[in-house]
Length: 282
Image (cartoon, rainbow, N blue to C red; front, top):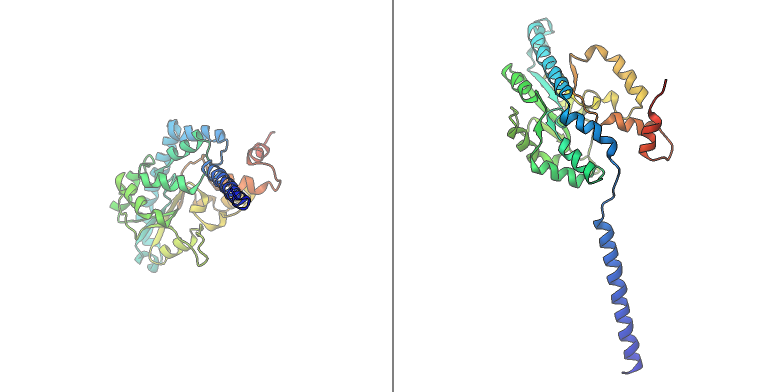
């Protein structure tokens, strides 16, 4: 073979082998999802799935919700005329307030996966979330009393149809694109997590009697992006509202309460160390 042709052929083969190697390695790296140790979530998830106490707390919350609606029905005549004219509404969160997503949490724990949007979307598309104990009964009771229910969630708007289907499947009333309000993107293409604009839009046409959720951010924007101490302080300020206009469902699996712990610790240590450091001794 001509020396020039030999070296040209050799160079092409070598280039092909190198390219194939890097493509294969890159693809393999992308296929391997990052793993995390989620064992600390096992107790909280078991509590939600197996504890009779969890069910009791949920029934307690929804019973208080019914009582609040009954009391409001008796006393609404004392309100200013403008307020009396407004139709009433209840604003509820969806995840871990109306729907139980603990199976998605279990999947992450068993497969050592962090929260990721791909798996979250996949779970939503399955439409298999069950209702939180007492939630459907409360929602139907509110509807019977002529109270409009708004389901305000930080699920992404692309999940709307799957969310509507799931809510209907387990028996929730008053489900439509008009009152299932998911988060949408801003002008920069980023999803907006605060629920305050959606709550204010509802308040323009309705008198909100109850705000219900598993996260304090579901109730007011004053709890957003705050330290643990600041969140405590805000709860103290609003203590008279809890069990009345504000009703909280139990969720120890995840939430802003956990994010606040990580936010408080400015060190570079991992979150598991931050959780350990946050524990208090006498």
